[in-house]
Length: 333
Ligand code: 3EB
Image 1 (cartoon, protein in one colour):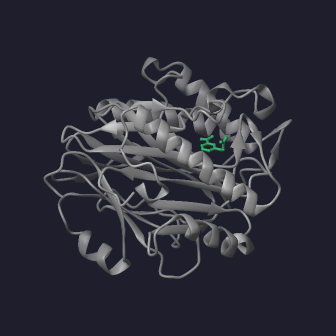
Image 2 (spheres, protein in one colour):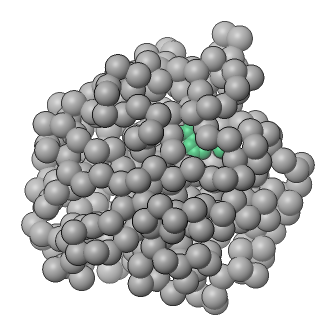
Image 3 (cartoon, helix red, strand yellow):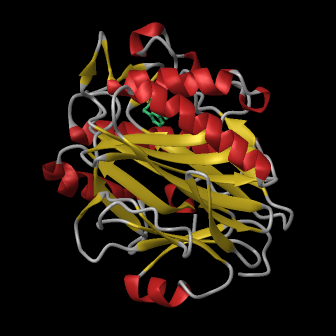
């Protein structure tokens, strides 16, 4: 694994993660179900603070580079840097308007990534407390979108044809968490033929449309292909579809399948079944919906396929579930 240039990612048990923490090529160990903590820039640990649903202990998401990784602090970011790629993590105090916070953190992120020689934003994970809470005549999510757009609109490298894949969910922590995979390599933006591109959403979803791509297809120098899949929900066209968790989950899976097929067209991995997405992360608004979502996913995945279920609020109040993950060549799909 360690001689494959590019990033690799998988779920491991907490015990295995403890052992991996000392390995030189481990970029990040992303943990769920513990208190939010991006660490001090001295180790690969990154605690998201997200609440886990289902069996504990939750798996740890292990990201590896293809060579030795350095962990250090640079300005507001904890940097995990190795061989043409880096993971940057930052906890932002959640005070006042999320628009200002988003604008500043995106500006700083683009600058830090450029400084590292990894100017391409591949994938961004974001967790915003009280995401659906009203703010002015909009809500906190829409404010965050406005700040993000303000920052990216001034950066030539990050216009609407070169947006990172992303997810943005809500929880009840005291801070905003953002972490990002950046690289010297660039990918191809992938849009979902079943959906209006988020960056072209009409103004009813916010005065500034959300700046993310549906997925990013990447071919590393080794030839290994990956598809970084953004948070995907029951959105068709630009509308939320269905009231029930069952129907929303099935629609979300249809969106994921369409994205895998489109991703393949754009240079992503060959596999087009859901089993190609490994690891798979599922965010559920109402914990009581967990058994239903789990049952539906089990119909579509081989037994034992790694899936992590978490409790989180989706950015639109009518969305009940969101799914994200990474598809790679060589996965069972
Ligand atoms: C959607 O399709 C669902 O604003 O960064 C998914 C992934 C969603 C990322 C974001 C929002 C974002 O519009 C919501």
